[in-house]
Amino acid sequence: MNQNTEKNSSACSSGGCGEPPTRRSFLRTSAVAAGGLAAAMAALKPLMELESDDLPTVEKFLQKHYKEMDGDEMQSALARISNEVEKRFDQRPDIRDIKPMDGVEFVYALNLTRCIGCRKCVHACVAENNQSRSPEIQYIRVLEMPRGTTNIEKGNHHYDRPTVPSDDHFYMPVQCHQCASPPCVKVCPVEATWQEPDGITVIDYDWCIGCRYCEAACPYWARRFNFTKPKLPKKDLNPKMSYLSNRPRPKGVVEKCTFCLHLTREGKMPACLEVCPTGARKFGNVLDPNSEVSQILKNNRVFVLKEEVGTLPRFFYYFDERYPASDDAKADKSA
Image 1: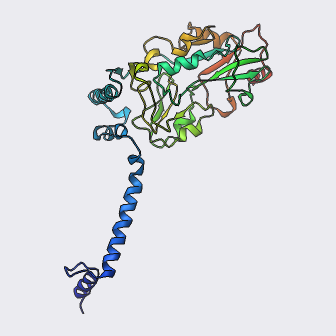
Image 2 (image 1 turned 60 degrees about the horizontal axis):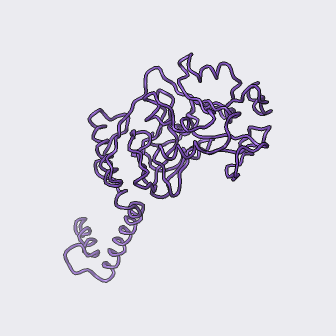
Image 3 (image 1 turned 30 degrees about the vertical axis):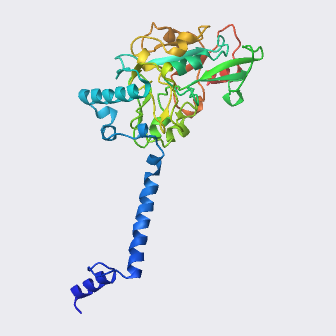
């Protein structure tokens, strides 16, 4: 029997030469097909669990990385997002791609002497940035701290007091620190998060794959993952949006504070600062020597959280000089 005959014989034995298949060849072929179908179903399961509105369109799937899009491609992406938002919320948003300004590096300074723990900043942030209401996604956590320490491991995020502040505590808001050396950026496998020239670390929600490496890498617990589709009532939608900040997010992506870049890149203040009743929050351009934040960094004893991890935060804390700084803060300053 020659080689071709052997091949034909082998093919015929598996039912592939046109002859009626045997029971054995039929079962073998069916098993292979069933295995392939099971593998395909397993691969498609994440998509099958998504609602129809969450399924990516071909246009979205083929969209380039943010840094690679030209003006026309960005306008096409913005039009697609506008259509999606209008379909979901019955309201046409004003969404733009707002670029950083030249000669600007944003920093935040927070006066812990003045913060009273009212959490108004938390809720103003939620309202401004179109965050989910159920479950409510919060970018800012306010810790009730025992006097004498700045160790956030000793803070209570779940304090519930009829009146604040408490005489035995001070209050420390914690949010994204917009680090100059952000570990979250280093671990992202698809470059869905990066640092902009004005110091703001951003996320492209269309590029994020939901691996949560960035969430694990952040030492300040500043990132939030959408385990479910964010629920935002139509009446609560903020239609003033930017591609890299407060546009509605889908299920399965990470989000965080962006210093309200859709406001701050146009010379306005972050929502959390605007609502603070005591003036504890200060924000501005550190490259301007005459800005309030520059003067604070120059003249006050400021400190950062977890300085030892080397993230170089752009979020600073300080106490009024009349208020005795904690031992931890003194140690941080002397270091």
